[in-house]
Image 1 (cartoon, one colour):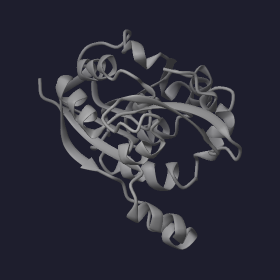
Image 2 (cartoon, rainbow, N blue to C red):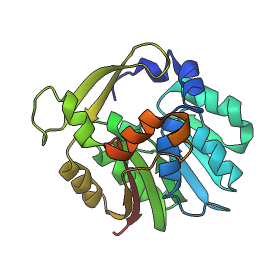
Image 3 (cartoon, rainbow, N blue to C red):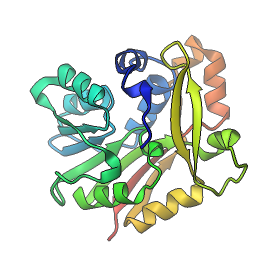
Image 4 (cartoon, rainbow, N blue to C red):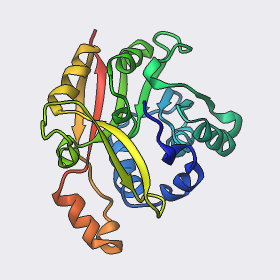
Length: 234
């Protein structure tokens, strides 16, 4: 996983920016939550927890939450935000989940995180291992058709590093992530023993139609993210 200053040096600004912005708060978050099963009295693992927005929502819904992130700064923000109500710690997700026990979670979520991993295999293998039987893995990621416009190779079927600048916090910040084809996504899930039970390309909140009709039309007519709910099959 390459260093991304957005989630380290600019962690506090990022946390503030995604509370109510368009792409995270008004599109990604409601779309992922729409795939989430009932989490009341369930154990939930939040991988790539960022500043703890999902961990807070899950806790409010009655879940027992463990939140994990590769950024020490994000872990600190989440810990300050939620205190002892959530177990939060730092872990490089490229290395799996070495401190987590087998079959210990009812639900695992990973919002907009997995595209920062070059090799999904250790991560997905770990997700499968920690899920209980019939547990759910709910995650979101970049839509490969969108990322293909930034492909340095022009080869859609290649998994490759993309380096861009995003203005999420109001100024350009360097960000690096990995683009892969749909075939690669589904093959990785299958190899890990995860079957897609539900799938979405997202839906902007209705309020956006009034507050930002231009972005609403864009998100209603053009791809942006992918949303999956998977269950264990092996």
